[in-house]
Length: 167
Length: 328
Ligand SMILES: Cc1cc2nc3c(=O)[nH]c(=O)nc-3n(C[C@H](O)[C@H](O)[C@H](O)COP(=O)(O)OP(=O)(O)OC[C@H]3O[C@@H](n4cnc5c(N)ncnc54)[C@H](O)[C@@H]3O)c2cc1C
Ligand code: SF4
Ligand code: FES
Ligand code: FES
Image (cartoon, rainbow over all chains, first blue to last red):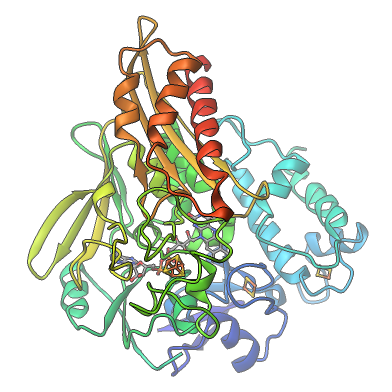
């Protein structure tokens, strides 16, 4: 069985020890997905699997056979940036840029989580539709660290992105 | 990482047959096990991926829920019945880790995740009885701010780090197991062993025994529940103290109380004696404080975690106070 990455099918690695992150970066030469801590703590390696955000460093690639992975390279439509990529540019959502692919992939999934009504740790009512507030965005982006401290711009960009569902 | 073979189990019998190999370990999402293998703390040579087994969350005949062990942490927290009837379970899960990790992590793996004691992780630099039986414990006289105060031993003071298990324990969850010798069902609070002289033996599971499901009995009618986690930063950190509580009032008196503690013990910790003193009492802070004293009465502290009993007492009182006052 193959792993689909940004719409194309690839063989799972022969060496089952290879993480999904190393498959992407080293074997397939798609370095957009970043390696920060390699132990689940920083979020730089965030990718989507069947639309859900996960950490590619904690996953063995073989575990994702038959699944569909989207990385930062699969987000833009040729030369047209994904709307969230444009918002990161507009709102100064990055400095060095190392955490940015993970931030963006994480927030793309976050918008869908808001839409389906997933509560967070700070949601006062577990059953109500969650508010798309800055506090909710910060809590829900807790797994994506930024060493440069670009957080205000990151939250601005994501707030603009998720508010599109309110209009 | 040392080489290993990998197979995805197609069914429970397939998983049990493959898991019978003494070199085998079950693999949930791997968020804990893969990390431990990379660090050289665990070295199975056969991995049996059990994530294709049941992840269903279904109503049981007696009004409870049966949760397939492969259900993701997010799926359990998000489930409509859990949010409505077992809110402490949703809250406990949502208070832990990050969205990415909760999406990956399975319920079975969460229960059997290993301690986050930093000396346990420090293969090169620290002594640890859990990793290397008989070697000594560098946490006892080391940095032990996060370590346990109840149920610990001179050999090991590590805590079980799960948030989810604390809330499941408060609702009397049971764990369904299957192995070469058949099936059995145990209370969640009987799964983990206290360290004693053998902190490397962490559970009562037999080698190759598979967690197939977690069962939640029907919650007490009209009960309120919540989960509160106290930690060094407001988000994305393990608990220093956590409290899951279920409270039912009747005619101005406490009819039923359940208190489970996290961050204090090598297992999800039920404070049953404390609970018993509350039944029949008026729901006031004096009663809650008495119960909290009983819950922490056996605490054994080290310099780094000497604050924990008092923090736990205050958190218990605050949580019960909120539940008693909360409008339904
Ligand atoms: C950065 C970070 C922060 C975290 N923060 C928190 C937190 O705040 N709160 C919290 O509670 N947790 C936290 N966690 C831990 C996380 O919840 C666990 O790693 C996760 O729940 C483990 O699930 P898994 O499916 O990945 O298990 P795995 O890593 O796959 O397995 C864990 C263990 O369970 C065994 N196992 C798995 N499934 C079964 C089964 N069906 N039957 C028998 N054995 C089985 C495996 O053999 C292994 O021993 C954090 C983790 C990370 C990396
Ligand atoms: S507390 Fe337990 S896990 Fe930590 S170093 Fe001591 S023996 Fe090891
Ligand atoms: S590289 Fe995966 S979380 Fe840091
Ligand atoms: S922009 Fe540099 S780490 Fe976030």
